[in-house]
Length: 293
Image 1 (tube, rainbow, N blue to C red):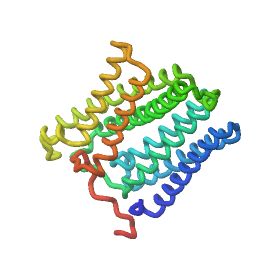
Image 2: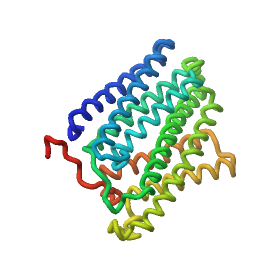
Image 3: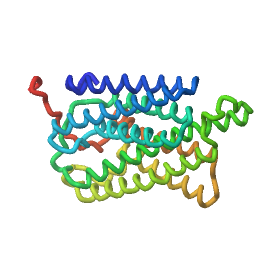
Image 4: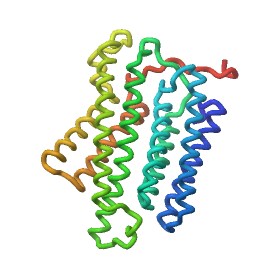
């Protein structure tokens, strides 16, 4: 995060503070159901999403193009879309545990974004193609939806455990029913699968068209950590949906498989960049600020 230009660093610090504030408000909402806390939480999430949008405007001005050139921009886009998803879904899901779970999910995303924060950069000339934009947007949408489903899956597992232990008093009126949680989990999985399929298809097209100019062989593509993790997430998601509609698998198995898919996708976004050497990186050199130049 310290590598960011000063204006972007200030904006991101504001995003980080807002994320912590949202998490605190989410906890308070669980402890004490209060419409003022709920309203404040929505305002803080909207403020956080707005700051993230301004940050992307700075990035767009710096690269003079659409800001989807790196993992940090992708994480900021993911944060904005998840914030919008939370605000929209909270209009009809008036449950304290749902709001709290989403708030803490947003905080985790902001912290992960901080680990990959860096200065703006342009795409490599060889990668400048419309397929890149479609691929990146599809993957971000898939990420938003699977994070949403993962939050719902955690709530389902927690609620199910409380019911099994016959400790339902803390959940009464604060948690959606198990059937509603499962339906929301499945809805997120279905749409995430569609978006991820589009992302993989456009990625395959990019690999076919641009392999030689990007100095990547087919072997490089299929052994790249980011691509392997994304493909595993897609296969597990496909298996989950087949088991759901073919064998009627539901409940705990569905929730756990959702969490596994979320792990692989988050690792594809973040872990492969930080821990593995991935060739799936088409960024050019960082854009220097006037002071650095």
